[in-house]
Image (tube, rainbow, N blue to C red; front, side):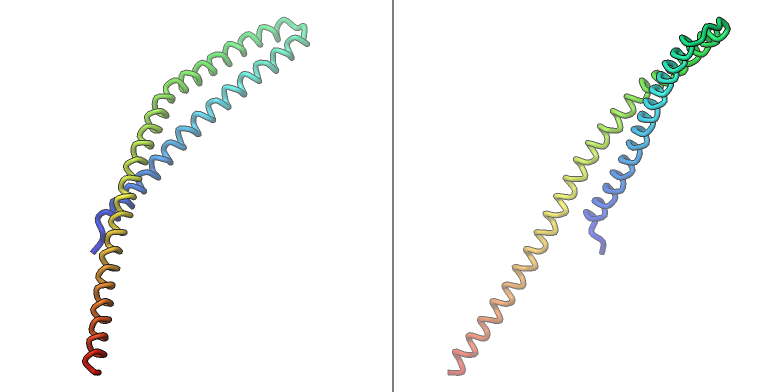
Length: 143
Protein backbone atom coordinates (compact mmCIF):
# COMPACT_ATOMS: atom_id res chain seq x y z
CA UNK A 1 0.00 0.00 0.00
CA UNK A 2 1.23 3.48 -0.84
CA UNK A 3 2.33 5.77 1.97
CA UNK A 4 -0.08 8.75 2.04
CA UNK A 5 2.51 11.10 3.53
CA UNK A 6 5.02 10.18 0.81
CA UNK A 7 2.35 10.81 -1.84
CA UNK A 8 1.58 14.17 -0.27
CA UNK A 9 5.27 15.12 -0.25
CA UNK A 10 5.56 14.20 -3.94
CA UNK A 11 2.39 16.12 -4.83
CA UNK A 12 3.57 19.17 -2.90
CA UNK A 13 6.96 18.93 -4.59
CA UNK A 14 5.23 18.91 -7.98
CA UNK A 15 3.09 21.92 -7.01
CA UNK A 16 6.21 23.71 -5.78
CA UNK A 17 7.91 23.08 -9.13
CA UNK A 18 4.85 24.48 -10.93
CA UNK A 19 4.99 27.61 -8.75
CA UNK A 20 8.69 28.00 -9.52
CA UNK A 21 7.99 27.76 -13.24
CA UNK A 22 5.20 30.35 -12.99
CA UNK A 23 7.48 32.69 -11.04
CA UNK A 24 10.24 32.19 -13.63
CA UNK A 25 7.84 33.18 -16.41
CA UNK A 26 6.91 36.37 -14.54
CA UNK A 27 10.58 37.15 -13.87
CA UNK A 28 11.41 36.57 -17.53
CA UNK A 29 8.62 38.98 -18.51
CA UNK A 30 10.01 41.56 -16.10
CA UNK A 31 13.54 41.12 -17.46
CA UNK A 32 12.41 41.31 -21.08
CA UNK A 33 10.39 44.46 -20.35
CA UNK A 34 13.34 46.11 -18.61
CA UNK A 35 15.58 45.22 -21.56
CA UNK A 36 13.03 46.63 -24.01
CA UNK A 37 12.83 49.88 -22.01
CA UNK A 38 16.61 50.13 -21.94
CA UNK A 39 16.88 49.49 -25.68
CA UNK A 40 14.26 52.15 -26.44
CA UNK A 41 16.06 54.66 -24.23
CA UNK A 42 19.37 53.87 -25.94
CA UNK A 43 17.76 54.20 -29.35
CA UNK A 44 16.36 57.58 -28.35
CA UNK A 45 19.82 58.73 -27.27
CA UNK A 46 21.43 57.45 -30.48
CA UNK A 47 18.88 59.23 -32.63
CA UNK A 48 19.28 62.45 -30.64
CA UNK A 49 23.03 62.34 -31.30
CA UNK A 50 22.36 61.82 -35.02
CA UNK A 51 19.95 64.77 -35.07
CA UNK A 52 22.59 67.04 -33.53
CA UNK A 53 24.87 66.19 -36.46
CA UNK A 54 22.22 66.98 -39.08
CA UNK A 55 20.97 70.53 -39.74
CA UNK A 56 17.88 69.55 -41.77
CA UNK A 57 14.71 70.88 -40.07
CA UNK A 58 12.54 68.09 -41.51
CA UNK A 59 14.67 65.46 -39.81
CA UNK A 60 14.42 67.36 -36.53
CA UNK A 61 10.61 67.35 -36.80
CA UNK A 62 10.66 63.63 -37.59
CA UNK A 63 12.77 63.10 -34.50
CA UNK A 64 10.13 64.87 -32.41
CA UNK A 65 7.49 62.44 -33.65
CA UNK A 66 9.87 59.53 -33.11
CA UNK A 67 10.69 60.69 -29.57
CA UNK A 68 6.98 61.01 -28.75
CA UNK A 69 6.30 57.51 -30.06
CA UNK A 70 9.22 56.05 -28.09
CA UNK A 71 8.11 57.87 -24.93
CA UNK A 72 4.62 56.36 -25.31
CA UNK A 73 6.11 52.88 -25.77
CA UNK A 74 8.30 53.34 -22.70
CA UNK A 75 5.32 54.58 -20.68
CA UNK A 76 3.32 51.53 -21.77
CA UNK A 77 6.13 49.19 -20.79
CA UNK A 78 6.53 50.93 -17.43
CA UNK A 79 2.79 50.59 -16.84
CA UNK A 80 3.11 46.88 -17.64
CA UNK A 81 5.94 46.62 -15.08
CA UNK A 82 3.81 48.41 -12.49
CA UNK A 83 1.03 45.86 -13.06
CA UNK A 84 3.51 42.98 -13.05
CA UNK A 85 5.14 43.88 -9.70
CA UNK A 86 2.19 42.76 -7.51
CA UNK A 87 1.94 39.52 -9.46
CA UNK A 88 5.65 38.89 -8.88
CA UNK A 89 5.38 39.67 -5.17
CA UNK A 90 2.33 37.43 -4.85
CA UNK A 91 4.06 34.59 -6.70
CA UNK A 92 7.16 34.95 -4.48
CA UNK A 93 5.05 34.99 -1.31
CA UNK A 94 3.04 31.96 -2.43
CA UNK A 95 6.24 30.13 -3.29
CA UNK A 96 7.74 30.90 0.12
CA UNK A 97 4.62 29.63 1.91
CA UNK A 98 4.46 26.52 -0.27
CA UNK A 99 8.15 25.83 0.31
CA UNK A 100 7.62 26.11 4.08
CA UNK A 101 4.73 23.64 3.90
CA UNK A 102 6.79 21.32 1.72
CA UNK A 103 9.68 21.34 4.20
CA UNK A 104 7.28 20.57 7.09
CA UNK A 105 5.85 17.60 5.20
CA UNK A 106 9.30 16.43 4.18
CA UNK A 107 10.48 16.56 7.81
CA UNK A 108 7.34 14.71 8.94
CA UNK A 109 7.95 12.05 6.32
CA UNK A 110 11.61 11.71 7.34
CA UNK A 111 10.57 11.43 11.00
CA UNK A 112 7.97 8.81 10.08
CA UNK A 113 10.57 6.80 8.15
CA UNK A 114 13.05 7.07 11.03
CA UNK A 115 10.39 5.82 13.47
CA UNK A 116 9.59 2.88 11.19
CA UNK A 117 13.28 1.99 10.96
CA UNK A 118 13.65 2.32 14.73
CA UNK A 119 10.75 -0.11 15.24
CA UNK A 120 12.15 -2.56 12.69
CA UNK A 121 15.61 -2.42 14.28
CA UNK A 122 14.09 -2.87 17.75
CA UNK A 123 12.11 -5.90 16.59
CA UNK A 124 15.19 -7.40 14.94
CA UNK A 125 17.20 -6.77 18.12
CA UNK A 126 14.56 -8.54 20.21
CA UNK A 127 14.65 -11.50 17.81
CA UNK A 128 18.45 -11.60 17.97
CA UNK A 129 18.35 -11.41 21.77
CA UNK A 130 15.84 -14.26 21.86
CA UNK A 131 18.04 -16.37 19.57
CA UNK A 132 21.05 -15.64 21.76
CA UNK A 133 19.15 -16.60 24.90
CA UNK A 134 17.95 -19.84 23.28
CA UNK A 135 21.51 -20.70 22.27
CA UNK A 136 22.72 -19.94 25.79
CA UNK A 137 19.99 -22.16 27.29
CA UNK A 138 20.88 -25.00 24.94
CA UNK A 139 24.57 -24.72 25.84
CA UNK A 140 23.68 -24.60 29.53
CA UNK A 141 21.32 -27.62 29.26
CA UNK A 142 23.79 -29.67 27.20
CA UNK A 143 26.48 -29.54 29.91
